[in-house]
Length: 242
Image (cartoon, rainbow, N blue to C red):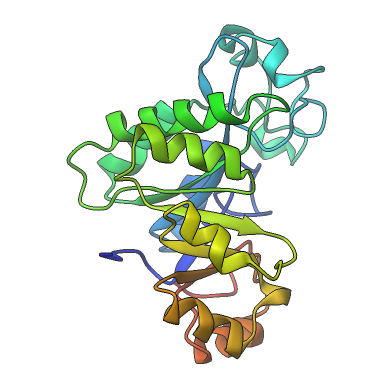
């Protein structure tokens, strides 16, 4: 397939330099000349797609309880920045639509990780794919949809097969290639510790691109690219030049 994506992808916006999965983090990553951003999406209780990693609110907001237990109107009033540092106090939880429109206006690209709340895998996969299709219609580079959930990716494939998909793995199982190909994936997305020269070569032979996460050591990044890695996701936007 066509692969218009850069080698460097900023993790959750700007990784650890700003509150993850916020527009402030994405703006900060862009200030380091990054042109593609990975972020997590899930469904609020009323079906609005929001940027959030955890199934619960406590770690990254001043709210409490399940994300799926709150309508977006409630989530929008939460502070998603103070936990990181006072400079980001009051930063809101953004919707996928708001982030997409900012990225598109600025000619930037997205890797949308579908992060379903428990029990909402297929529903979230389908909703994310349909919303991505609507928001990126006519864009020069479609967003990559990635997920650890095969059920979510299968639902995404069913409703928007034209959007590129990547199956995420922590530890690589023996049948990683078969699982990726069964879902019609464009890429394998794997934890960097499990990627070797032979694994990357095997993925390429299978017609798959390879994305590594989360690579924060410049020497490790250089080694992976030396083996033919296609892209990596990093927190270290200030250390690894795009």
